Length: 215
Image 1 (spheres, one colour):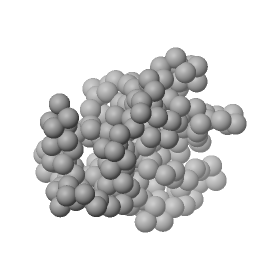
Image 2 (cartoon, rainbow, N blue to C red; image 1 turned 90 degrees about the horizontal axis):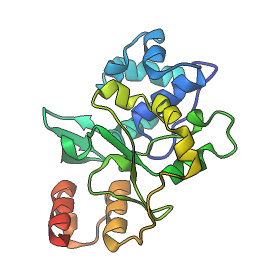
Image 3 (cartoon, rainbow, N blue to C red; image 1 turned 60 degrees about the horizontal axis):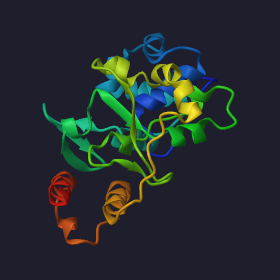
């Protein structure tokens, strides 16, 4: 177990957690991974041994790791991803453009001398079909864009590059009045609860249907 470590946050993705562990130890995600005996690609591929090693280093248990993985998404085949116990086409979760809520990130950083150790990425921000932050009632906005998965997933480095814009509020999304759809999607992602007739339908086709009907 490393003396300098962080704990998982609610809805945090695995790349975000890895980046915060790296930031706590004064380096970037790729360098940290190599020094700990594995490559960042093996973590992004969710290979068992690197995840076990990360658990040991961070002092977290298998249930906390399972939660990180569930909010990250696991590839199943070439074009499908399991996310929150639902199956999606991978492009619904994997995109070169990374979105988020700057107001949430500012809340994370409040009172912290090292913001990139405190700021973290929420897994629900990845999902195409989820476009607002219910907490702040603001639209999600692009935070950075990278075609290379390693660069895209090096969260603390990307947050450092965009820190001034995030902290100033200059890139905040516009205010949005949440709809019943937004609260419905939130509940499906949190615990799968759905008392509507859409409850009998897998989530990806359900949100696709809602988008088409809304259009």
